[in-house]
Image (cartoon, rainbow, N blue to C red):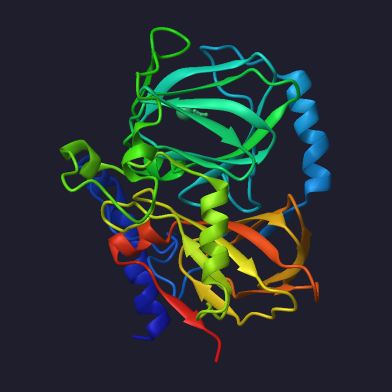
Length: 352
Ligand code: GTQ
Ligand code: FE2
């Protein structure tokens, strides 16, 4: 018997078994099924670049066109990467939230972890489990899984921030929980910035963290000034060959990533920096805080400047360069590396 004949008789045997097995909610692999494995990741997702000049008018359009009811969904512009059905990466979504003077984004909680990185404006407040944190450009505020949160804004011009949530991961694990609070805002406790007072120095911490503080990150807000100062101090010490000077916002109790699923980072590409190439499982999203540069990802070349976003698809070779000889470039980076590492799926390669 030839090999082709064997294959086709095996194929028809499999096909013939299909209905019998299906009756008992079982199946065998069919020749028409996609292969279980590939030699290396084959993601339908493509790396992508969103330019601030193109996002800005879209944000104005959703600001004018979409209502924000205090008990309804948020007013957000989602970054939907090419090749994915929805969302920015297989595990997390990036959206830009627009809030107008006087508005309230009402209180709720969900099993997805989230955070906000303020892109423009200031003076909004996010209340997280009764603690209230002011949001100004460059600040980071966490809303860990299942924390009540609402946003209020009393400023005079529209304010925008980056929202990241691990929604696709929550969906694929069928672990969605959501609850609305019974009024638009929650009461603020008499120590409104408790987590900052206990953990905000980044150097010292309470000798006896409570049980709750050890479960999820007990530090809810990271101020721009402290993060930038830390990054400045790190300059001139050993740098990353790809990302140059880079620091992670850490959980001060266990030294791990700020959220269990996501690592949040601030990095500086020094003037004229030309980085090495890397590829890794999982995705990286970059938001350009300031500066000008170029990122190469797979076959693509993205020339970026302040306000742009770049996402790197899984296992795409990527590298960065700062195009200025005098100005530094500062990027805020999010990666789902903690998810992949926790599950044994993390790999990376540096081009030699
Ligand atoms: O601000 O609570 O972009 O619940 C998506 C879901 C923001 C939020 C989003 C949310 C929020
Ligand atoms: Fe939310």
